[in-house]
Amino acid sequence: MNKWGQDNIPFIFIISYDLQNSYLKSLHEVPASELKYNFNGISNTTEKQTVKPEPLIWKPLPQPFEYYKQSFDVVHRNLRAGNSFLTNLTCSTPVITNLSLLQAFEYSEAPYRLWWKDRFTVFSPEIFVRITKNKISSYPMKGTIDAAQDNAREILLNDIKESAEHATITDLIRNDLSQVASNVHVKRYRYIDKITTHKGNLLQVSSEIEGTLPHGWKASLGEILFSQLPAGSITGAPKHKTQSIIAEAETYSRKFYTGIMGIFDGENVDSAVMIRFLEQQFDGSLCFKSGGGITFMSDAQSEYNEMIQKIYVPLC
Image 1 (cartoon, helix red, strand yellow):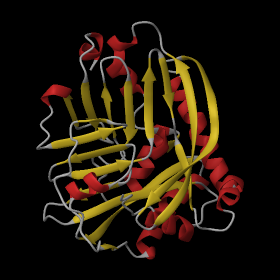
Image 2 (tube, helix red, strand yellow; image 1 turned 30 degrees about the vertical axis):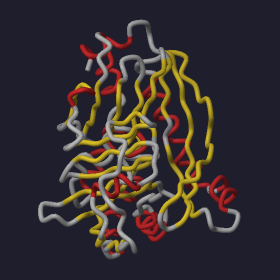
Image 3 (cartoon, one colour; image 1 turned 135 degrees about the horizontal axis):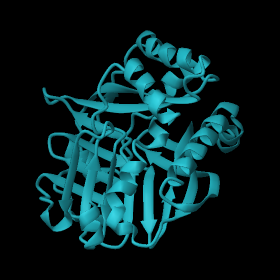
Image 4 (tube, one colour; image 1 turned 45 degrees about the horizontal axis):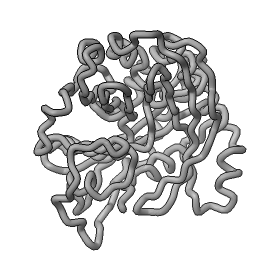
């Protein structure tokens, strides 16, 4: 990544949550028969190859609340002990659907979309980092609510738990960026985006943190990106201890879920956190990985409901 950055060679990168697996190819070498992407309009595919199933079948089979509560209790015990201020707890949920991975890619609406044949499809609304000229920006996303709820915007912005969670992650990302950039500051705090899904609209809260990279940053592009991993929004704070809590609490392997994907176009970087993730299992069945941030103020039932609420495909 450092070499290609220094030589201005455009490439795509996909890095797993545990940093143990990755995909790295120059853009002209990416076979569209195996990997398709669309990152804010930069794409290697233009025409749909499939027909969207009508009617759509989409039936999540979430784990019983009692099982979720066992994982939640591990997290909450560590939060009460002061081992973490915020922990992102996720689950893998089997889904019965007539939607294929490729159809989910071709018909979903999201700024960052990726299809990896026989592995997974991701349609992410969450930016990881953007680098434009020598400015690096990150956009942590924390806080979700059903847009159809009365006074949804006000409820979301005034929720004490959500506010504390967002403040923690914003501070964590600010500190992360300070490792590689100067003049790091919060440019926008807690702005709201509307996300359209096949089940209705959601409101989600993000912030924008920006810093200035040193001259010649392209020659250190790989080091810059890996210094920010794993993404703070899908781990928690402090990162290292919180990752050990996640490993204890979660009952499956995240693999590429909550890793990152992105493109260096020869001049700039655009990347996303791999959330909203539909994965193919060894037997051909599909599962959807989702979750949310837990604080000491969290209620297990509410967090369980939010995890299920996020099991959607933003179909056009």
